[in-house]
Length: 422
RNA sequence: GUGACUGUAGCUCAGCUGGUUAGAGCGCCGGCCUGUGAAGCCGGAGGUCGCGGGAUCGUAGCCCGUCAGUCACCCCA
Image (tube, rainbow, N blue to C red; front, side, top):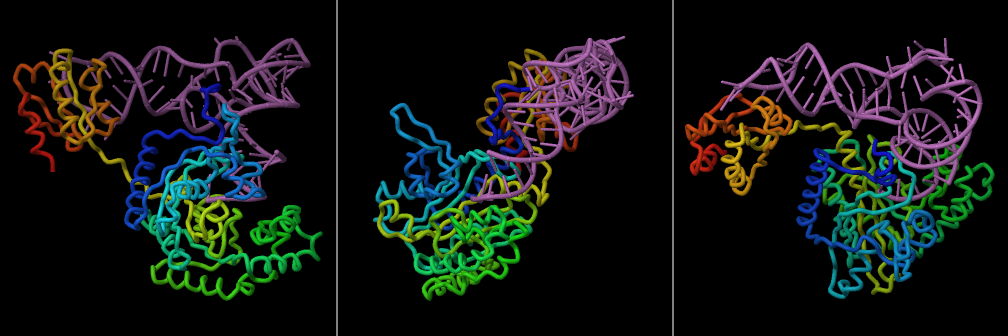
């Protein structure tokens, strides 16, 4: 039991074959983003605490209780990145990117939040996300959503739905907030304790309540759609139209409300019905006010963040487990002399063949080494013993068909192997 | 931060109402088998029973605390 030196709470180690699934997902992400014309941004894993306080919102849960904050040796307050949007905006601002026109950026990497771990929730988790800045047009919202949709489609994740909503802007949202307060306040006593608090701080979030005693009042609450100003309504219609053009199915869900303070107009979530309580795989929206609030030019922007842990969880529960393909060659030497003779070939194969080349240095018998070949999932074995050595041969064994084939051993071996590559 | 459940070998778990040297399967190492693989048989290594207190003649099983895991709440990816 590794009792003392264990990974910190809420963090995970990844080994093969799981780490291979991460590599594959990341490779797909890079290629997908490239096809949509997005370029990768990498930012520091920690930033000055002030960035998140200003960017995410002082009263947000993230800032109030979930940040990994520490003072560095110079007495500066630093925070491990709890989300990517603020750092991306900071970096773009710092290097004057917004002055150069619209920007399409994407990122992949860890975030840190001090929370109680549970299914689909970790203290270190990983996000893929994109930020499309410089377009106020609804087509940009749809582009961002379509990119996420394509990734889900590529993995054929079933049971995922896109929930779409508009939460208005600084003109119409306050009016709706007042209407919600007016609706719920007379029934304050019958609301759940959590919702009583929500009514104070963020009435919109009340719509998202899971408490059964709140349900009835939520059903009869005024709809935000009726309060949208003409501009917001037109934008929302435009998003829907562009989604239809892109062939992305959606459901309008008036209860979708994002937790971060900076969202305006469009908000959306991709939720899976095969996950636990944390069933949001990907979420995002428009944040037209964030760039300027961080001291930049008035720049509209829209983006999303996708949780890689949750994404892979959804892939896994979709149950498309493919068998590990046999790949590579187990180089087997029997005896010290054969081993020394085999080493140059191993080195050459590793440089030239493109296959994984496995070798055991344990001075084991043939039988034991073949078992190791199985464990390595090798496709072939190259066997060199005393006999072969004196006869100038090496045996290539196909581990699937269990057939042997003699090859010349020496300078010609590589060539002979090259011929059997399909 | 709140709540519920769990914590015995690398992994999955047994261990009956507390009673002498804590078990199995898988995995690992070796042998049967001078050189042809997923099986079989035999043997071996590997355990502070999460950790710390307490109660008891005595506990891995009881009590308290603590840490960790799992799931849910708050909130979020």
